[in-house]
Length: 147
Image (cartoon, rainbow, N blue to C red; front, side, top):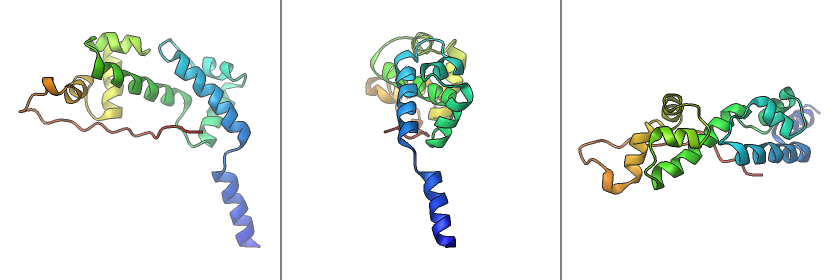
């Protein structure tokens, strides 16, 4: 009896309901389509027609960081594409992916990727790598969300 109850509780904790998956998809679609704009938790929640609290609970129940942390992560991920394939300045990239300034973008990028945007760009563009400079490994701390 104890094992059965424990198993049922574990399944409740680890399984994600279809409704949560569907809601999460709506919230993520909103973030993915609007990340370059100023987005608040209210905006994300409104996209799913839910409260801010429920929005945070859905992200938590599905094993994800908070909506705003996910947004920041997504912006950083999008910026890596621009760093690798354009000559835009770091500040221009920051604005294009929705950050309100280059300094804050660089701070967030460093925390997430363990290197600065410039170091990342240098490591991604072989022609611009300085052989005397040690490359900083970039690591993605968050898994991709797949539904």
